[in-house]
Structures are given as structure tokens and as C-alpha cells.
Image 1 (spheres, rainbow, N blue to C red):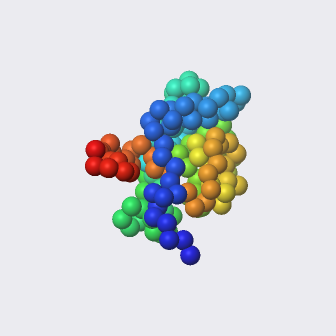
Image 2 (image 1 turned 180 degrees about the vertical axis):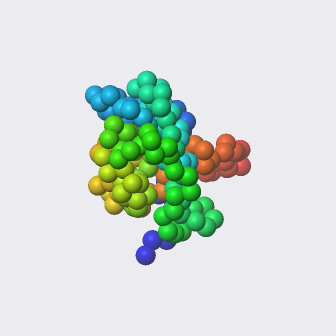
Image 3 (image 1 turned 90 degrees about the vertical axis):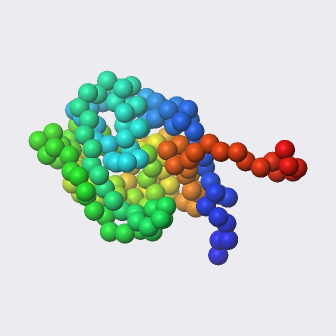
Amino acid sequence: MNDRLPHERGFHISWDQLHRDARALAWRLEDRPWRAILAITRGGLVPAMIVARELDVRVIDTISVKSYRGKGGQERGAVTVLKAPDPAVMLDGDGILVVDDLVDSGRTLEHVRTMYPKAHFATVYAKPKGRPMVETYVTEVSQDTWIFFPWDMALQYVQPYRGED
């Protein structure tokens, strides 16, 4: 049994780190001419924008997929597409780059892959269970690591470890 709180096995990503890692993802993807980028919302929006800028891809669409529920999104639910991209652009996914921030269990990407089987799937971060769902990623983290993205955090005062000030 694991008695740790999520932040005790956490990987904190700053805006600067996310930007560097998303650019590194783009560099790994530069050898193909992409027709469009499909960002998986919400987490894939920022990396997709950075990758699109680096690769000079102007056609960007989104797919909104919900697979987590509950407070903090820690409870898995059924995979549901809330908003689908333009079918005339996506076709079977050939020439489409699907971008997300993280692949965790792989359920979301597995679902999207059934919709666009010829697409190339890329994430900035990958956990071992979901790793088979992506062709390209930048950093692998352990399955039990909780990733804190910059949009999930706020700056605040932290009490020193020792002392009062």
C-alpha cells in the first residue's frame, strides 16, 4: 500500500520547462510534412501550439476527450468525446499529428487512435502503461508519479523547513 500523498511523488513542471520540452518534441517530429495538428484538450493545447509554431503548421484542430472525473480528475470514467474535429480535415488521420501533454493509462489516446488510425501520436511526457500508445515522446516518468503542470499550480508562500522565517 502506498501512503504517499500525490505531491510526495510529484514531478513539477514549470512553464519554462514545458516550453523547452515541447520544442524538443517538435524537433523529434520535424522530418515529416504534417497536414494538420490535432490537440487533445485541455492538456494538449499548449504543447500543440508550441509544436505548431516550431514546425510551421497552420492547420490546428482540437478534440475534447473526457476520461477522468471527480475532484482533481483522479477518478477514471468512461472515455467520451465532447467535441470532435473537422472530419474533412482529419479523414483517417494520414498526415495528422495528434499532440497531448501526457499519456498516462493510454485510454484516451487508444480511443482517439480508433478514430484516426493513420495519425502519428506524440506526447511531451509518457508513463509506462500508456507508452505503447505514442510513437514520439520526450520524457518518461514512472507510473506512480503525479505530474503537476504549470496550469494546475499557483505561486504561494511556503513555510521554511526549519524555523519561522
